[in-house]
Length: 136
Image 1 (cartoon, rainbow, N blue to C red):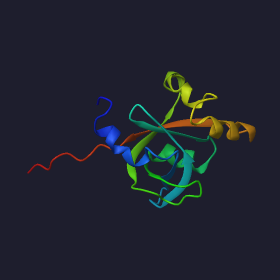
Image 2: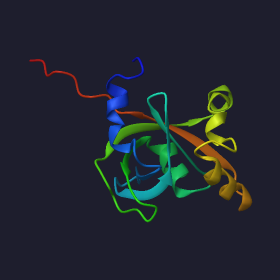
Image 3: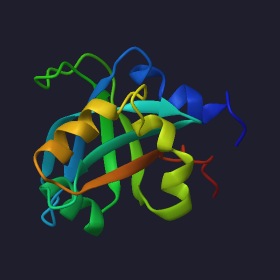
């Protein structure tokens, strides 16, 4: 899908926010909402979390997420977007290095994790595909 198409519109609710309420799901299906710093780039959303966090463990089992613009305390400010998260490693992570550099939008999140002695994972969220037309 080319930039500026349906994927970009899918993340429109997040355009004005640098924080999103990330909702991951437990094995039981219970939703677990957590505010995270986000960056939007190339029709995807990005966030970081500690490798040993509950979010990382839940995402390893179930990559389905929702993102909604919110305040840093988690008060939702707009519509949620459904997506699929995947952890970036190797070359995929290297290509997104500018998100984590000193002038990048996720730098302070990365720095806070590192100051706490945590290993950090970078995740990419692609919007969930819109359902196609129903066929009989």
